[in-house]
Length: 315
Image 1 (tube, rainbow, N blue to C red):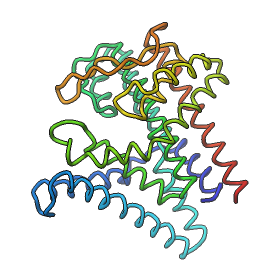
Image 2 (cartoon, helix red, strand yellow):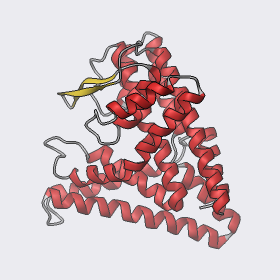
Image 3 (cartoon, rainbow, N blue to C red):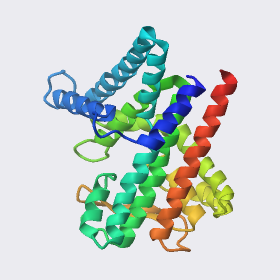
């Protein structure tokens, strides 16, 4: 992985974001997950659902790694410039800084315009929880939580794996993350078939989640938010989450903004009482969301700059 490809991918993502005129690789991965899941549930592969969940993970993740690597290497064989361009394009498709901002902003824009039903619908596109009955504060809190969580899943983690193993490993990570978002639920329908995918997502995100939290604390000091409290709440409440990873960046963000996250959430009609994260010293409102976006962009730039420097020094 070269520094040129990395910074090229980052700039491309910041300017273009997710292209609308071509099918995103994550969409293709999602369709593959649905097909293989269907085969497993109908018993065509001869495995029970828990065993099939292991097969599902490998059938999706390994081909994604090999195909991505094969395409990029094949393009390099045709011409070095062509290979460089394809490496940048594939790498940029694993990053989500611009799209995370754009999609979360659509929720807030609808809400502040008085269109709460539209805000709920837009929110349902980026979160797994039920959104039909959320009030204004619930929506603000959900946006902050998803931006904080996806700062790790959609920005820092892909950069981490991109720097570590180039486009193939970063795209494989996206497959791991897609599997978890589609089948990694702890409920009756997905408890068995999604068990392995959920655990592998926990493993792949363990380091990036904690790295993200440390970056949030660091940029909070730089931005003159409450960096000291971000560190305190990260250490105190980072494990107050059903996920072993999501709580870390959420806690750091909650501490930096002196707000409280977590609490009662509904998934698929079932109410879940998540532990609270942070202290409710300030309101969870539009200003808190704006500051979360600032933290997101600052953390993104910090991680991108650090990875670029390291890759340049190593290269």
